[in-house]
Image 1 (spheres, rainbow, N blue to C red):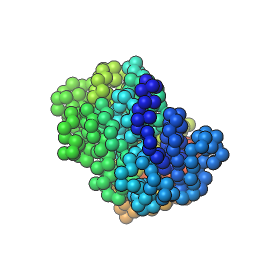
Image 2: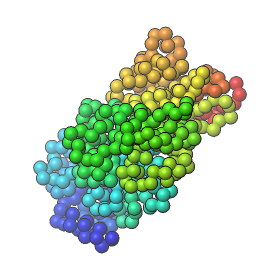
Image 3: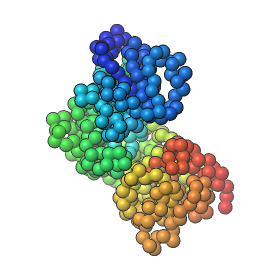
Image 4: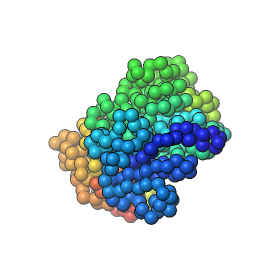
Length: 463
């Protein structure tokens, strides 16, 4: 295996001038991979000090490091550019310098060229991390050795030397922009909603990038509830499976109400009642179905997958219930960084409340997204709305004039929690689901979630 890999690397980069753009987590993994296989490379990062030059030299010997600006001459001389996903290749400083015949790739593309490990690939605007984590959990429970990588877990190039039965990849639109040769066993676009339009400009362009995950796939899996996920004509030669919240035809996954209970279905066959599953809400029902479809495409046993899903307890910061000392249900969904994720959380959780009310905390940096798809949910399912951050007031403006008396903008997350505690009664739910990125107020969504949890625990003493 290692000899074959070394031979592949040698063939791939023989007599090539290789430049890595960006020296963050992904760029460092690319540098480690190349250095491990004796490939000479240069690194260019526009930031002044993303890494200490001394640390770089100690790790990567005499390979070149250029910091502080994009080096147009270095970029122009490259035969291969390995680009970190956070770098926008349409930036004129970069785009105008890239040679016509330059091979522009990312770490995922390089992994696909170097690895024969069967792949299961997942993209979408929301739910990706939950679905790939479920897949990883299920695959290992079935006795396979499963790796997890892409936009989650270890960088894939840090795993390429290992032997595994499968690798599960979570792929962002940024990563898919440079993927050309992936041939997954099964792959899905879970859903499409406004996200990263500050980079991708239009929802059509964003959707087309997401759909590229279907290129060369053996089984394309799409969401019947979202037509934008249906494989386009460019990918209509694949075998397809689907999932959705409606009744499924034979051979497809869906949901049905049987004797008053919501059941996960495979065609007309009832698989399991949702009430016994660890994660509740329609959005999680769809996540379960996506996992079952992806696993089916990989040849995994359906009944064994169902048993394994019963032991998956969910992700931190994704519809995570906080164990508080009051009778209020506090839910940390800080990972909801776009409109689609928040809409899924509201529509999935609100029906579980019966006569109790939902208090939503939302806002942050919307990244140019259109918030209007939230209007109906904010009007019909959210009793009280608390907003914060750069775009909080824009979200608040979607509520009717009458509802503005139950809408408040605050300056901090602890202040939002304090207000929610005053408003909530026993049995009510307070949901942090921002529909926005966190970078206007926090280092990342994890820090935002931690601040929320700490604030909840501080304010859950009896009124």
